[in-house]
Image 1 (cartoon, chains in turn blue, orange):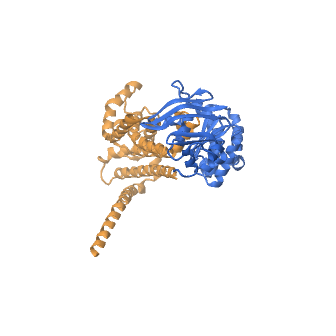
Image 2 (spheres, chains in turn red, brown):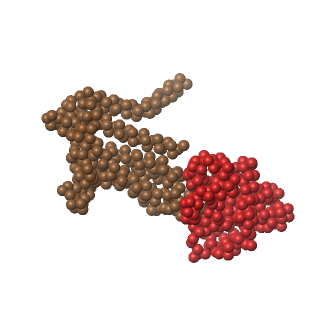
Image 3 (cartoon, helix red, strand yellow):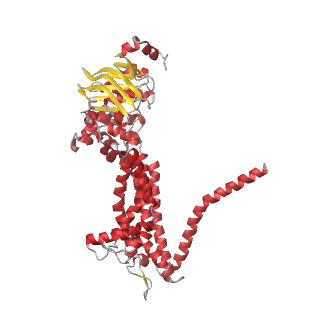
Length: 251
Length: 290
């Protein structure tokens, strides 16, 4: 079933046309990877889905983006809080808050008034278990999250995101700050999360896209050149530019 | 070749001298204070000096108790903290997180202007506007009260607190804010649940430095607090501060008398208080950097 649909999506930063006539259709409970060279607009596209681009001054969007068949770009749409509860995001550099592990996980719950205080403990345990952090951190819940290792921080950020039970998890190069082993572990985690969440991941690492994703989209200079099953994109790309990129002849 | 080396040597030493000079001045001032104050403490113990309730330096017998002056300084300072700290923190947040473009520039310039107003002018303005106003509002015999001093001193401390707090808030990584917003927090929630935690050491240090300025301030307090050396019980009565005592009495005292030395002793107490505050502020600033 379609989860995210974009029709003729255009985005400008001031005069710079960053996304050009993008049409896409992402299915639910799959991992969709967006690949492409630096500056092609893949992060920008990701940040359309939770409207994080709104923070950038001078940004302008045109076209239509539907999540669960509801438009999120409409003039009338302004409930960013609800949108961002539904569409979580994990950033390139792990960015836990300078609070305790516990406070990090329940941050979203507090913000959205999702649960009673009595339920916090259970939700913290559940969220940390699903990112496989519980055993490591169950005695360190009151410790400051800034003291964790990079991989633990990133896992914590994922736990924090899924604690509010989003539908979609956006990941903006979630492993680029991690070493190969930690990367592999995060990728395993993504496979587990796929059962419950729709995941969209931006990566410049083609091997990663090939390993983890079900569908892949290739972007170049603000255009979505090709989109399809990951196997097909990597074995039989239809567009010459996609082929050049994945065989390493481009950029 | 030789000449160049000599030149290097001289310049190096000159720079060293300018660097060491500031420390030298502090040491000199402190020894001078200690020397003059020591003569006083030979006669009267520190304990009776600090806990004595009466300041009658020229009566017979003379009494040197600075408790009312210490409490006067403290109550004015406390009031100034209540006035300035919340307002300044809010203002710093507004400037760094909310205000944009023109408004931001105008606000920053305005705050620099506030810092540039000489304290005697602020005291003068307080005397002619705030003092009669408070007198009418609270129906007091005089408007020269601790409250008027607190308000004017609060104004004086604000630029310091705002600028340093704003730096601390700006130094908070943008990723914290992004993370909070991406979780669906509103701008306000991001500020008070995340950003303020990260900026707290800097904000505390800013407040301490502001307070340091308030305690040391003399001219404005002398003009608008009434200068009555009694132990204050409310904000609505005249008080006298440590600083105002030194400034007001130094000109009238006989050089070399007990009264004269007692003023130096007050100076030592004041020095110790501001020193403690500055060191505490410094500790917070450094903790922030780690």
